[in-house]
Structures are given as structure tokens and as C-alpha cells.
Image 1: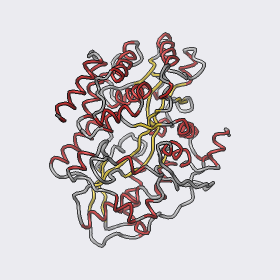
Image 2 (image 1 turned 90 degrees about the horizontal axis):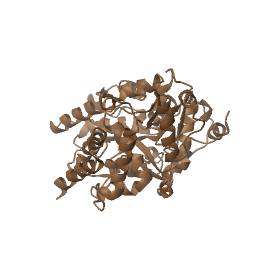
Image 3 (image 1 turned 120 degrees about the vertical axis):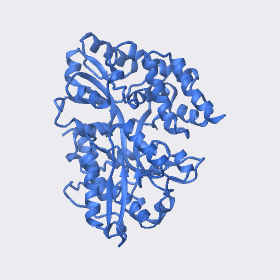
Length: 454
């Protein structure tokens, strides 16, 4: 057993998550445990142990934990167990894995006044201002037995000075890293992981010279390109730059932002991605990587659960997005994505009670320990009791990067209160890969802001 694995065996997994989040001023509570996964912990709230209502009620949940997503079986298990314990509550799962289809259905449901009770939303400000979302402040304060178990600061991800309240229900924490195929690296004569961006470019060149596609990227699902641009921006301008863009104290047409988009274009021009990336979707991107057709993918820790049983299982290692030479001050700026849910603020009575009860059950200590073991993602709770010896070594490797993350960042658009920025930024970045100049792409994004704020 590696020294790292031994260390995690004798500490809680939450310690690593707290390390990353505490660096932004948050504090977490971790417990030490060697408790095995088979142990069945008690529910974290008395409200979870009994039916919340005698009235028959139906609630709807819509996430992207569906299809091939590694969290889909977990969500199904949670729903079934909750309904078993609460026979008067029916939970209807309307989840859709593919992002565009998910967003289209969500927008249609919101427009017709039939938004799900619980759903995923990358941004919350506009929905919150319109009263669509439930402010979780009272829920958090009313059940401290449940809420005190979370890592300190995770509820802050769903806050904004322009909208009083807390709107994101934290479920998990994901780190975004490069996954690479060790066999393909060896075939290309690559002997070590790149530590700098210059070394990463050299790795890409060597893979190209060996007729190996360096980086899988399915641009048909535009979020894939957005995820590659995030670290380019953060490693050259810092996470604070995205916050400045949202605060309107900076512009997308600023030279440092345009530079990050130019770096994305340079990767395309040097052959870092598949030639047909614009027609490639996310599932195809993953299939190519799992089949050993591409050497690397830049993806979140949610990918780990999908690697098991594929031809590359046991051949994959990881590394953080490397530091860019000349910008060492941003070496610790890295991506952390919280798995967040939001609750419908329009429902009342028994529906509201059932909705809150299910949300708390999903994020309870009991269910979150299953989340870590079964989904192989880090929990947003600090009180989960995890035996590191029972975890996937690749998962252990990825979560260990928490100690290197000094300034955590999320999607660049996610700091912005303008909901249309999600589509605008990603579409414009893909447009650059298809022929637009970085300056044109940046102007498209800035024009979207100017049209909606002037």
C-alpha cells in the first residue's frame, strides 16, 4: 500500500476537501475513522427517520445523473430507499444526462411554470431574483444536526451579494485534472508527467509525432471546450479575473482574457484535439479515451467511476493542469466543481415538506458515505467516515490534489449573474476553434454583457 493510501486510511477523506476549501477562508470539521463501507451509519436527522406527512404527495427531481453518468445508480438507490422509508411520498426522476437536452427541458419547464422540485442549475442569481428558488437559510438553521455536518463554506457557493440568501444545496466536490493513458505515453517516448505548460506542449508534440491523438475533446457538447478554457484563464490571469468579469470591473476583451482564448486556439492549431472535434459529443469523446484512441482527457473526478471495466482500466494516471511559465503566481489557481442542487421556491405545504425531506436525505451522512464509495466522488460533508483502503487508488490520487489547490475556481461564466453567459461563452469559444479569431470570440461574449447591462 502506498504511503498516501495509508495516510488516508487513518484520516477522513473530508480532511483533503477541507484543505482546499479552507484556503478561501472556510473551516471544516473532520473525523477520523477506520469504519468499513459495510457499516450502516445512522441517519443524520430525526426528520429522515419517519414519514414527513400522512398526505400522498409527488415531487420531481431532475439532474444530469442519468444514463452513463457514474452517479445515476446512486441517485436511483437514494430515491428507492427514501420512498421505502416514506411510502406516502413519490419521487419522480426526470434526469437527463446530455447537457443540451437537459438545459432545453429545464428552460421549457421554467417557462411554463412547471419547474422540478429539485434540479441542477449552474447559475442561480436570475432564478433566485425571480423567486423560483428556495432560500435554504432557514432550512440550514432549523436542522443543525444535518447542516453542521457539511464542510465549512460549501453553502457559500450559492450566495451572491445581489441576491440575499443561500441557494445551492451541496452534494459533492469534484477536482478537474488531466487523465492520461500510461501505455500511450510510453509508446510516444514520454517518460514523465508535464510539470509546466511548456512541457505539456512538448508532450502533445510527441504524441502527434507518434500518430496518437493527444487530447480528447467533444466540442459538440460545448461545455467540454469551456472546461478546457477555464484553466487557461485561471493559470494566466487567476480565478479573481473571472470574479472581476462578473463584477464588471474587467472585460472579456481585456488582453489577458484574449490571451487565454488564443492559447485555446493554439492548442487546436497544433493538433492537440481530434480533427473532427466539432462533430464529436461527450460520450464519443469518452468512448475514444476508454478504447485507448486518445492519450488524454481533461475532466472532473466524476469520470473515475466510468473507467472501471473499460480497456484502459489500470492504465490511467492523472496530473493537475500545469503551471504556465511566467505566471507562477497562479500555480495554485485550480478548478473545483461542487455538485449542487437547487430547490423550487414556488411550492408550499406537503410538497415543500417532502422536497426538503428528500433533499436532506440525499445529503445525509448515511447517503453521502454511499456517494463516496459507490460514485467515487468526494462528499461535501465533513462528517463522512471513510476507510481509504477501500477506495479506488485513482480516486485517492485525484483527491490528494486538494493540498495543492490554493485558489479554487469554477466555470468562468458561473460567477456572472447573467444566465445567458453559460451558452454565450461556450459557443463563442467553440466558434474560435472553428475559425473565428480570439478577438472576435471575446467581443461576442462582451457584447452579450453590454446588451444586457447597459
